[in-house]
Amino acid sequence: MKLVIAIIRPFKFEEVKAVLAGLGVTGMTVTEAKSFGRQRDNTEVYRGSEYTVDFLPKLKVEFIVPDGMRDKVVNAVVQAAQTGRTGDGRVIVVPVDEIVRIRTGERAEDTL
Image (tube, rainbow, N blue to C red; front, side, top):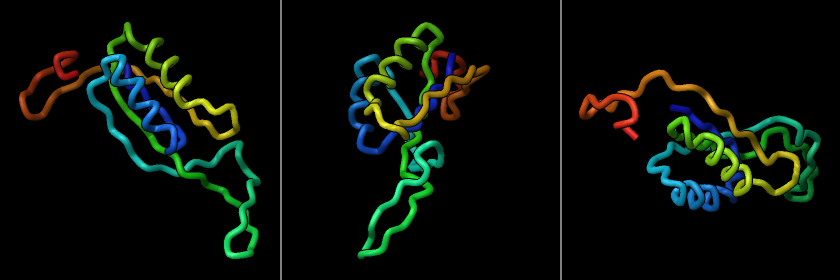
């Protein structure tokens, strides 16, 4: 099993969620986050004053998939979240050793 972590632009979330649902991903955790990276030196104007934006709002979407779905899911997230501009985000894949559903004690892929 793999833990997939996608850091995406907030306005792309509905597209990513729809694609994942279409692939059979049944659950996810979404966290609001702020990102600092290559998009540095962006300036915005607020009430007539110009200021530099260091951190941009992002969403961190986490979900677990079986090993065989890894590439399909990663490619789908990239396509759904991509705008072509700096700051589109990242997809990170991490191996998962074990999962235990607290309520029932189920283990491994039975918990997906």
